[in-house]
Image (cartoon, rainbow, N blue to C red; front, side, top):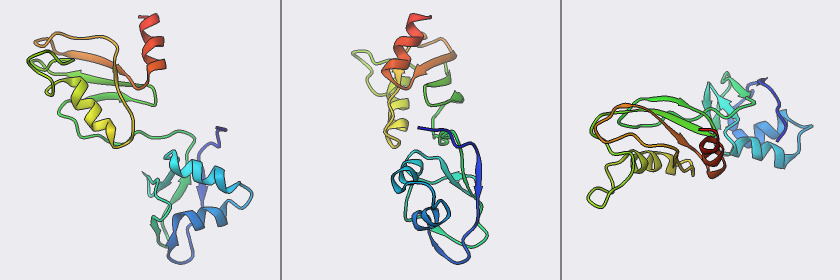
Length: 154
């Protein structure tokens, strides 16, 4: 996918939906490319990533195309220190397992993170573990390729 940089688009003159407005403003861009940008989370309306083609637009709204997908804010019971397309870095609290055991399957970092990522069709992979009663920075990969690359260089 080619990088377009950050590009501000004109606001609509009257109420409309996002896809028709994008197709009108980006006349020189193929329809499939516009839909791909939308699906990928690169289109932002008033600084919020929008993926729905039928998102309502009003005059005066700020519309831009960004060159990188901004990860959505996620509701997790621990701080997310960093997230991009390949990794997720969290501050694991004391008392929480990294992965499941025979006695505990759901109250784990792995389970909690994957439930939070499910809405965006992403999945986390454990790169390393911290003991239950150890708090600290925990790195998770957001894809098998990233996991193997990190583990090879660990």
